[in-house]
Structures are given as structure tokens and as C-alpha cells.
Length: 219
Image (tube, rainbow, N blue to C red; front, side, top):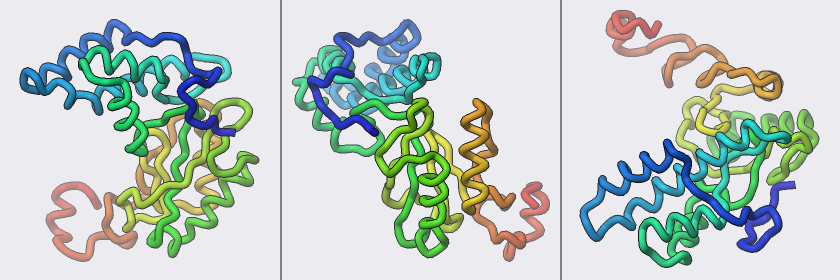
């Protein structure tokens, strides 16, 4: 089960600190903003914290994915000299930030109209049946969390899912199960279209600027 967001939950660590590489990145990110406007760096610092947690989680047993502990938000508030509640507000507003532990692979399933018309229900069923969990739940081995999301902007290649940072498009129930199996083995599946199409062109090939497409080597 995906853990609910609770500031004082047992899963919340007592402390958080950016690692050596993270500290250098923090300095670079904060320096991008004018003096007195450093609070504008809150979003990239939240993302940086989430990615550091993901790196640590990938080595843990059982593994876990990227999320932002309360201690990390408090640390960011201290760095940027802003009220802690302001950091909580930003982190809880944007769906890109996970406020509670998730699986190593966060499978975000788009079920908005274009994907639905192209069979997203089949993709959802393939995931829930294959993994034995429902939406907003995590497998017992810590590998997968399923989450339903709104449009991810890859409508022309629907149905699709986002897994961590990568898009997987032109899915079928069978290809979705294959993706999950490959990830479970610790391997990296092919991102993008699972039918071999280039970018968003027709599956049969380019219908305009065909000569230019051939010159560019995309057909």
C-alpha cells in the first residue's frame, strides 16, 4: 500500500542532508537567482532531494523510489531562509513530488480521454493483474507503485505510461507486462514507442516532408 502523506509518520527520517554532490548542485541552483530571490530555487531543490532519496533507495533492501521526507523539506527551508510551511505548500501542490515513500519504479498510468480511447483500461488491468496491486499501492518487494495521472502530453502515441523519468508509448497489454518484467529483472527497457515508430510520425512512416525525414535518418 502506498503510504499516506503524514508529517509525523513512522517512516519519516529524523534528519536529511544533501550529499557532497548534492551540496555542490545546491550552490549552483541557488546562484541562478538574484540576491534576495533565492526562495525561487525551492522547486529544483525539492527535485534534487527526491532524486537523492531515489539513488539511496535503489541500493536499499527492499528498494524504494524517490520521495521527499519532511526532514528534507525542513532542510530546504533552512537553506533558502523561508518558512517550512511554504516548502510544504509547494511540495504538496505539484504532482511531480512524492510526499511519501513509493516503489523503486513509479508507474504513472494516464487514463485521460486520448489514452482511454486507445485502450488505457487494458493497460491499467495488465498492471494491476500482473503486479497484484491496485492504484496507489506498492508491491511487497518495493519495486513498483501504481498511480493514475492526468494527461502526460504524449496523446498521439497513446496509450502510454511514465515510469520514473521515462515515457513508454504505443502500449498494449502484452508490451506493458513485458516492460514490467524487464524492470523487475533490473534491466533498462527501450523507452518511447513500443511499436518502433519515430517520434510522433504515423506508424506507416512520414506522410509529409518524406525526403527530409530520410535525409535526417528517421525513416
